[in-house]
Amino acid sequence: MKIETQTSEEMAELCKLIEPISVAMLSNLDADGALVSRPMAPLRVDSAGAVWFFVDLRSSRVEFLRVVNLSFADSMRGTYVSMSGRGEVRSDREEIENLWTPAAMPWFPEGPGSRNLALLKFVPHTAEYWDAPHGKMTRLFAMVAAAVTGKPMSVGEHATLNYLLAH
Image 1 (cartoon, helix red, strand yellow):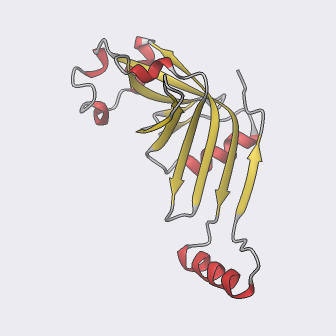
Image 2 (cartoon, helix red, strand yellow; image 1 turned 60 degrees about the horizontal axis):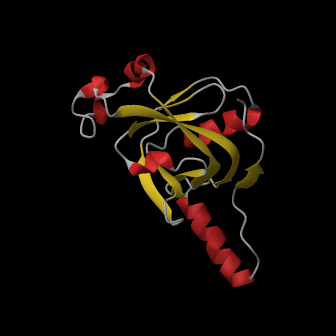
């Protein structure tokens, strides 16, 4: 994932957390109001904090992007990020070419010229993260100590960031 220099300190911190995570879960409401999720490979985070993905225009889900959640998880590092916002579908051929990667070929075998290929721009409004980078053994020890003492464990950072919308 390409990360551009961020215009806000909060987004710069979130980008540090999500940069090594190669798959995110994108959730939205479907036509029946049910919550549905699917794995997506983030391509880049632009300077305003929008996260970009390839999307298939034939998917019915592109119609339900008014309210979207994007979550990242790296259990080995103890990093979890949940972002809420909205999605926008873009068909900018030049940008598709710029972001094209051979890893997208299984979904778009016609390559970047596929007429069904578009971009999904996720625009975050709020985010929440949990970061416990002290290693698995430290986290395990803290969990055991919390169970023994009956006191909540704290081995990392947790924050909620509001009003991330830069556009």
